[in-house]
Image 1 (tube, rainbow, N blue to C red):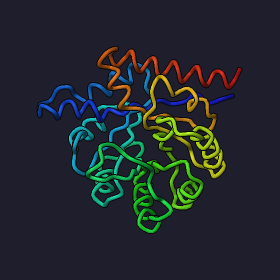
Image 2 (image 1 turned 90 degrees about the vertical axis):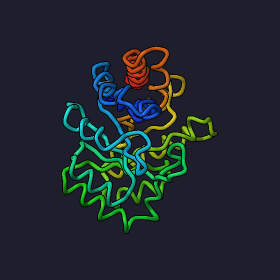
Image 3 (image 1 turned 120 degrees about the vertical axis):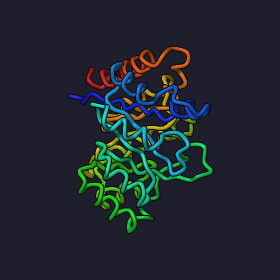
Length: 243
């Protein structure tokens, strides 16, 4: 039987809108609770080094208020590891981060950073935190992720979302490799109503994390409605696998 796929909603851009005016509205924690009530299985929040959207106090409030899994996205720095070990979210997803980038531009170079990543991953795991690595669907990076002690890989789906030839096949191959190595497989970046179904239909991918599209579409349709529609599209794609 095909496993029901989890939907994680990234609330970063609720905080982006709030920060544009410097006040408290809209509240990303309120958005998180609304998304869970609408059918999301978990919440993702990226605490960037420059605090451009999510802030420390947002994560503190999420960790004390949220009853669903919290996935903290973070750079591979000692500061972020220390904060994560203090907050103890359900999971941490280590992502590459550059101050000048608008959004995450690609996957983490795990193969080239194993020596520095290994002690950070070990420290997070010792604090009871599930560790995910945000990588491109690349065989070398997947093998390195397993070797360095991650429990999860999350595939960067940006190239697929932008229509690059061969990316769906690449995701399918990578998902099989990762699952074969004992890694749980997630995916996200650039997914929308129009392109989510083929990714949702990859059997080994058990979780999708989606943010920018959902928050943007919520301006027109409301957050509960867009979460419910994404949930419906994902469930329909999985149902076709079992048919």
